[in-house]
Length: 311
Image 1 (tube, rainbow, N blue to C red):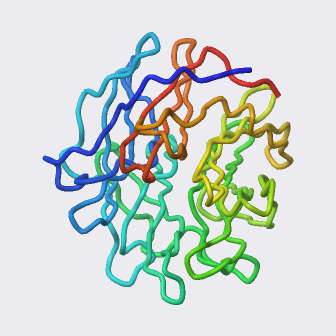
Image 2 (image 1 turned 135 degrees about the vertical axis):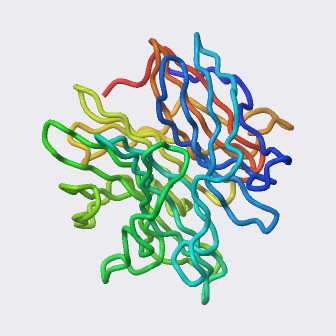
Image 3 (image 1 turned 45 degrees about the horizontal axis):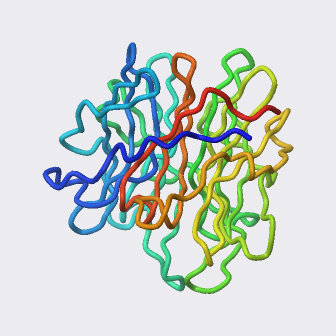
């Protein structure tokens, strides 16, 4: 059985930075040069609105250290009344020839539900230090087939050879009550990364009636197929990290026991829940960044492994 070796907390809220008074949520990584990488994530300001900033890190021999934090956010909440006016959280970054595309989560206040709507948006950058919205409207909008206000957390991969963009995203299936949305993971594809064909293809579905949420897919593609780490939630125990494998990216076999990571001991920063994982590879080692207790309230930690599950 493959297990991630936990290395502890990496990124914690920085009180001297106005945009991350609390939380460090949803790590999203891009390479810079050599051993340096950038981790985008969202902190919360004094009004508890999510803002996207970053930490630059150095990765070497199974260890990660923080080099610096961005002084200001790279993306802040949108205009009043827009889909992202209550907060923004990163989900995935794709490097094209001349642009970084940030697929992000927009938070919008609920009405008949106490939870907020979560809808995916898109912003672009030339330098990775400031992003401009592609549109004030959401990238994925509600349809008759997906009307419930949860269309979010996209993982996006670009296949340059086939000029194919693939997306795995979180999609609402309804509301059990005004406090409890139900959502799973679906698949979409595109020729330009902007206009997406959504056919309602469910990739990862619930294992039992107790589960209410399948969140934050992180997909690695290799010659032998696709691997996905994702978060699943039973309200009685909170979030855990699951795993699934696929040959074609659409048909998946869920194998949660292969996720390789469990909650920590009593009193640890990740003792109650683990979620929102991001996996990347560098110099023969896989690194897994993730959140623990409080949906990022305690920060971002990481684990390492020399191998990942086979397909």
